[in-house]
Every structure is written in structure tokens, then in C-alpha cells.
Length: 121
Image 1 (cartoon, rainbow, N blue to C red):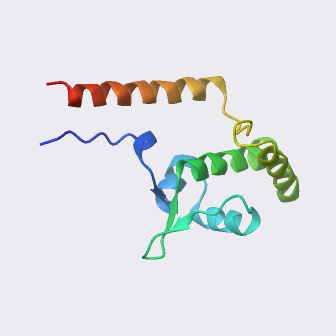
Image 2 (tube, one colour; image 1 turned 30 degrees about the vertical axis):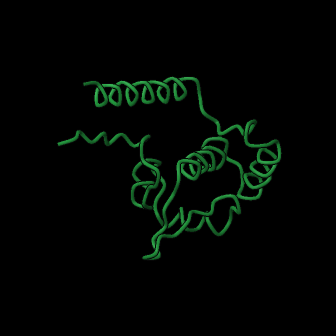
Image 3 (cartoon, helix red, strand yellow; image 1 turned 90 degrees about the horizontal axis):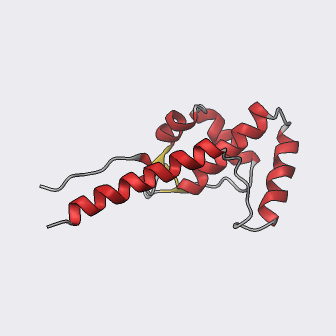
């Protein structure tokens, strides 16, 4: 029997309910944001359910920061995101703070340690 690591950073796709839990943004708001923000376009699986990638999850967090923390209007947030996306993906600032970077690195390290343990004879 193999061990299954269920860390959210390891998932490729998230359902809308999972995104709601992870970001604190209600599902109906997520669906509304899809109609307002062209960059937020989660794919749909064959059953028609939305599936969000990590990039979509990061974008939802960025939109939430722009609207709720920086208190921008929808139009202001759209303009900011458009300007950030034009800089290129390597320069796109998703508003992650140093502690979030450290947490992400810790999760990656933990996943690598778990993977090494699985592969060890």
C-alpha cells in the first residue's frame, strides 16, 4: 500500500468548493468574478464542473487582495491586473508576502522529503 500525500499544494485541480474553503471567497462571488475578470477562466471538466488550477487559485487570492484589502473598485482591480499581466508571467506580482513565500517553500520541502521517503528502498 502506498502513502498518499494530500497537501493542497500537490493538487493539480481544485473544485469550486475547495477554492471557496481555501480563499474564503464564496462560490457565487467566484462565479461573478469569472464574468468580470478575463484572466480568471477556470476550465470545466466533462461533467461541466469548474476546475481551478494553482494559477487560478493565486489569481483569486490576488483579486481578493485588490478588492478587499486595497479597496479598489472592480474597474480599478481589472486595470491593475491587466497592467501586471502585461509585464509577463515572470514578473506578475500576485501579492504574496514573505511569510507566504516561506510557507510555500516549506510545503515544497515537505513534499520532497515525503517523496524521497517513498522512493527509498
